[in-house]
Length: 312
Image (cartoon, rainbow, N blue to C red):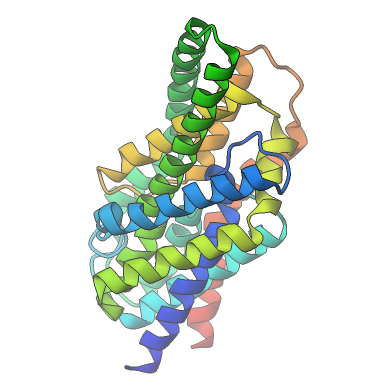
């Protein structure tokens, strides 16, 4: 196996590991505030969802970069894209900043495609850019609707213990579904870009998703605390609705092969529910920091990819 393919495989595994650590907040109930048995159980549910989402639906993102954004493929392009994305995601995770894998990779794809003359599909780029705006908005709407539905159902259950058991079961389902959406879209994006060079679709899917799960367990709590505690603390039904609304949004975009950010979706859901609950105490400094990260991720990815190309 050529050196570039070995490098791409290593980079793909590391990107998924960092993705798991950075996006763990979407697999854990957004009100879960500390390492605990609850956190462990939710991480298990979310991790299982990541694996199944990648294996079952990850292939739907196979044409997002090659065949979508870029007309052609090359092993050098794959290595450059994965390395640039890895650096961006790693820095964001160290800073405990939830970041979009999609934005970092799309930004890196532009100089790679132009420099290596792979052909850039500008209309698909515009579609992906529009999805970055629509994702938090759609997630906010879904989350508000789900919050209303779940709240109405909860009020009909009079027994407090039965309500608690139902709530615990739904939270586990929510963690699993959020992980599933992350696997199908986020890990699926890495699978799609890696597959032409590496092959072995089933083995690669299992390996990449397993790497993401390890990242969730080992280093996910830092970014989870940013989402669950430092932006806006939601409890119970509201947190669950934000998680489900975000996962539903990403799963919807996955059906059309459009890569989107599940962190954007869940945070959009959190803010949407916060407004409907008339919560005016929000850490706007952290929100602005997160939004600034979303805005600069494509530019940083572009700059890193350009630098890597210049060095090689």
